[in-house]
Amino acid sequence: MTLRAAHIASAGALALAACAETESPVSRDALPFDPVYLGIETGLLDGDLVQFDVSMRGARDTEDVADYGECAAAQYALIRGYGFARHVRTNVQQQGSVWTGNAVYVISDALPQGLRTIDAEVTVAACEDNGIPTI
Image 1 (cartoon, rainbow, N blue to C red):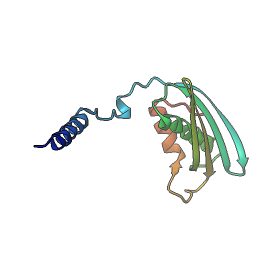
Image 2 (cartoon, helix red, strand yellow; image 1 turned 180 degrees about the vertical axis):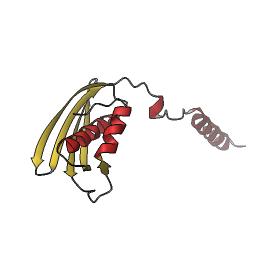
Image 3 (cartoon, one colour; image 1 turned 30 degrees about the vertical axis):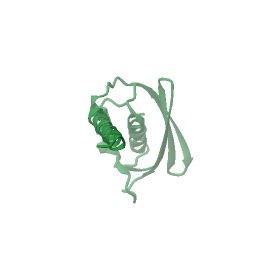
C-alpha cells in the first residue's frame, strides 16, 4: 500500500469512527420541563381575527410556546361563543430565559377550512389535562 493509499484509508477510518461516536438526538419528552406561565394578552385585529401574546419561562422549545398560544385561542373562542379556531401563524422568540409568542387565529362558530383547525372544547380540555393555563 502506498503512503497516499494509507493516508486515505486512515482518513476514512477516522470519519467512520467519528460517525459512530455521535450521540443520538434527545427527544423533547426527555428534556426537563418546569414551565412558568407569565401571562396572555389578547387583541382583536379585525372581526374574527385575534392575536394572542404569551410569555413563559422553562419552555423546552418553540412548540411549548405555540401550545400556550393555542390554549389561549381555544378558551377565547369559547368565551366569545365560538366552537372553533384556525391557526394563521405563530412567531416565537427567546430572550434570556423568557420565551414569547405572538399567535394569530381566526375564530368561528363552524369548523373553518384549512389544515390547522382546532375544536375549542377539546383543546381547552387537553390544556387543562396538561396544566397549560388559558385565558
